[in-house]
Image (cartoon, rainbow, N blue to C red; front, side, top):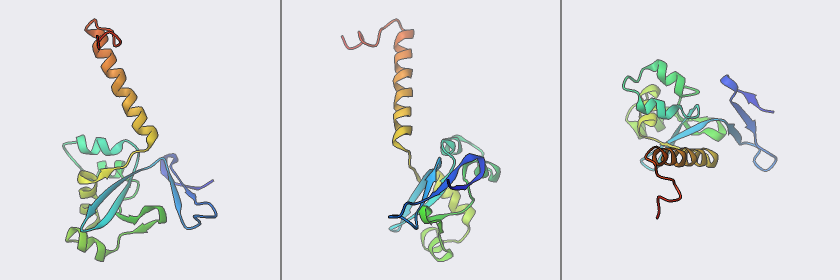
Length: 142
């Protein structure tokens, strides 16, 4: 029960206590803090890693990574950064350039479930490496 975004991503309204808040489901926020101010990009999950690994960072690739080609101050409220805020933070008001900087240098926030999944993948990879060398993971400590 929420507003549908493209590709199955939704924004859900907050409960009675948090009426003005939007709950972002199946998105990844990328946060950049400069001059004491935070700005955000709302991205598709796991696409930020693709952006950072890419050698050619085109506008088309940015459209695949970011849900909207815009910069947010408070994404849960749907509040975009004003031109004055962009000028103070980045020294210009070009939203595309600002979004590129956020994607390149910002902190990608991940959920607890995603962190658990990444940890499990790493453990599986280590166990496979040990097994391929003829060592059993439980005997490796001995």
